[in-house]
Length: 159
Length: 174
View 1 (cartoon, rainbow over the protein chains, first blue to last red):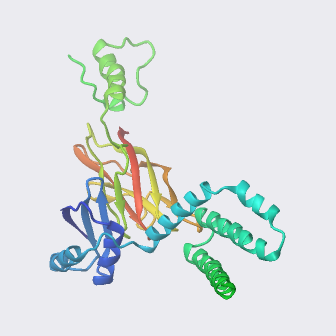
View 2: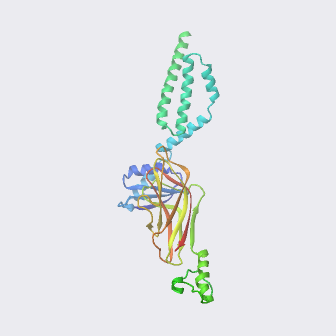
């Protein structure tokens, strides 16, 4: 195992760079480390020629795109957004909407809203992965779009 | 003769029975065998490392790597064992373990895999940022008389391990 110190690398998305290095140099690095001043160290695996890998590592760093996100980073953002949506939800209005609904057609969108909120709570608490929450959200969105199209078609028919 | 705060060879100086009843202890003997040890206990070599100002260090490495800033040098007054005590506040991005070991003069002290502490994240997620973990280590044998470098090294089983604060003390003990 050899530690290659590569100096300060401000602006790098280090977890993404770690994934990029592992993809470009499979089984040749054990990972990376960085400190609070963004000083980067690449840990080259035992038995690998660290000096020989310097060029390949430099190429990966040069091609690095810090705007990419790791799945974990994307999930963390999704969790934060879900938590923000839950915190801002008007629960009283949702309950009022349920109470005020008199037909199934009126109740369905209200229930979908409530399920959407439940979904976000689960995401915010890390109980379900954002991907599965997204799948549920997609079903709800598809229903709303279909209903909107139905309404539009009906309105067109009455014109 | 001036006191030097060095720990004397008491048994060598006085014999296995120490001071004997009925004999007058001379000032030099008391100085060397009573005052010197007391002064030594207060003045014996210690060292520390500390960094508590936020994000200190991150790693994705599955082999041990130096933790930036978590090292110190201690010059022992004699061949002694070292006691190392400290804590980290850390986190882990996913369901993997953070592992910490102590290195003295390039020699790892803990278990090759599990270091001196290993903190497993729960299966439902990572280790929350700032979670505390303490470590204590007494060297199995005395280190030689002279200067020694003690440092922390860290690895992860996966994910990203982050140290938000670290604090350690190194103490010469007999």
